[in-house]
Length: 111
Image 1 (cartoon, rainbow, N blue to C red):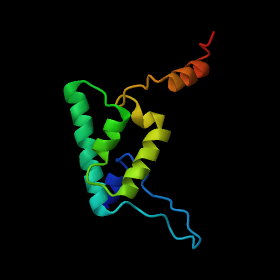
Image 2: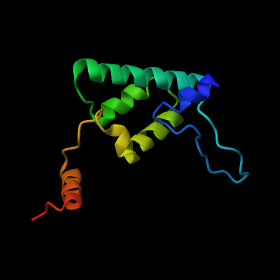
Image 3: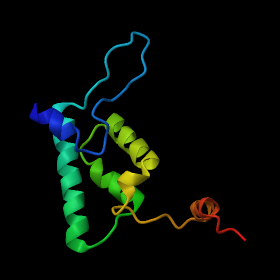
Image 4: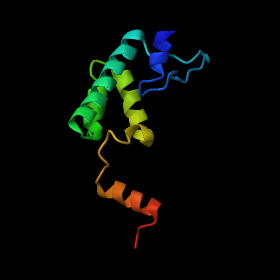
């Protein structure tokens, strides 16, 4: 249905896998959580285009997490942390020493 198609477009997996002993099927975001996240995501993308800017990581997580449950916010933060492709173009590259060192090691730029 239309809500399932919308779930595929927001920055969280369509199926939320929760490890349980009873092996139940993966959960989906609720209808209201899906709509709120979609609204927040569209707004963030629109503002990034309109202002020609990128967000800080924490700023983007806060914007996307507006009016979402703590569980959804935690899932969102984890997804944003692990999925570099999702951050490209929206999030300012981290300039901290640890990230710069790691990036330089990956690119083979260390002395």
